[in-house]
Length: 121
Image (cartoon, rainbow, N blue to C red; front, side, top):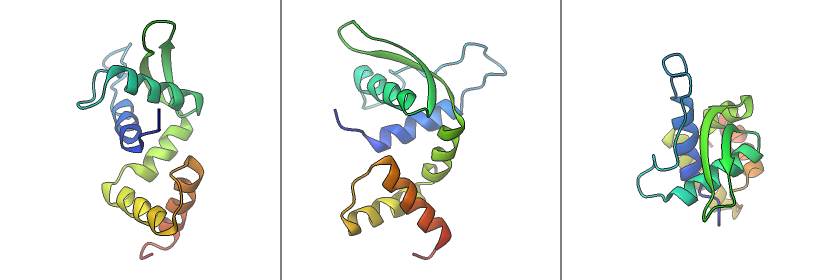
């Protein structure tokens, strides 16, 4: 399965929005995203967890993976700050396409840093 950066953005935003002060066991469920299947969302939650961007509880061994995302890590907050704005995300995607670069975590961070340093670029 390929990474879906739009879904990754949706997951990060949803996890950040959890209100832990009001609900002790707050979590983002994988069926919370219209247009995405539970398995696809769970897969993305699992790889975000493996990358150290979110805290999640995942189980496998069933027909498809199942994850609940519970919080962002420091790195997750940092990435979300780069990707939160639709305008910035569109600019990042444009630069990546113009330069023929893939959408790896590393290249997204580099391009975002460059755009922040040169906002007109």
